[in-house]
Length: 93
Length: 271
Ligand SMILES: Nc1ncnc2c1ncn2[C@@H]1O[C@H](COP(=O)(O)OP(=O)(O)O)[C@@H](O)[C@H]1O
Ligand SMILES: [Mg+2]
Image (cartoon, rainbow over all chains, first blue to last red; front, side, top):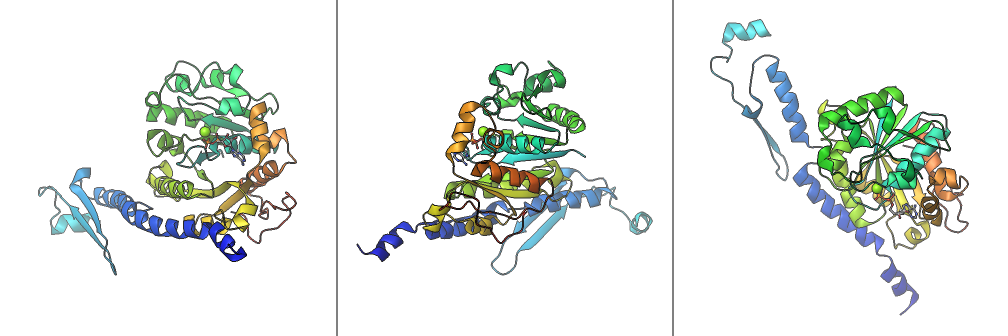
């Protein structure tokens, strides 16, 4: 075993580094490191409830992750009685 | 204004309790009014590392449940007047901690102290999320080793989503404390380097604590390492980290292998 191969055998840190980078990129895409969806959901609820009373679990926020772009799907159920008519909406604004 | 700091990591045995005691004592030695709070319910250790194990009468759970007043549970350090400990319970389990109870205790602590330092248990469940809930600042303790880095990444995610600060839509102030670092092994490529860990976790660096026998010596004696041997490499590294926490711009040093000193300056600004 020459000196170089001895060195290469020892230098395992670069392997650790690369494994971590790949693994964490994957794990972050699953858990969403900043929990963006949860944050968005809370802020959307806050904005909506300023104007209409909605139930928290009637607000759905979904993130579809794609290769080039991701899409955010927001679905909010409002009781029809509360859905503002033209005049009510402008009064609220 | 009081600052609540959580010392957290995900993984166990990386140096959270050691760091809580060392940073707490260093801040207190700087004249700050400090309380260190043990959130590791059922596995308390901070009392031992602080050398206060025989003085524990009441604990965090007694206070949370209203069986004792906060003042009865706080233990004033024998060496530093401005340092106190709020111990965890050894006999109860973490379910005895209610969110509302913790809220109340933290509000009271904020009134009494400049720094409230919470020593988090390991894991990512209820215990650690309760410990980080009130934090303004987080110190993420990480060893240069794959499983510790991975777990720190998870904890960073929780800090950004499960804390009151995150719920209010504010940014959590997060700092990396790299502990048990062996610069010689990192240089030989046997251990992840400071830059590797920083690049992967991408949060600012608060300090680099070398692997050192002084840490075990200090815990044997029940004295935070910053008080036990202030001239030692780990004590200096912790004291520098404490100064950075309180806003002093101190240049980052890497523990130097050859001379065993913090000689080599690291061209990086403090976190
Ligand atoms: N810088 C260090 N050098 C040597 N040993 C250390 C260092 N930091 C921590 N240790 C040791 O590692 C063990 C775990 O530390 P501890 O602070 O209890 O970790 P945690 O609270 O994260 O579980 C203890 O035995 C402690 O003495
Ligand atoms: Mg501990």
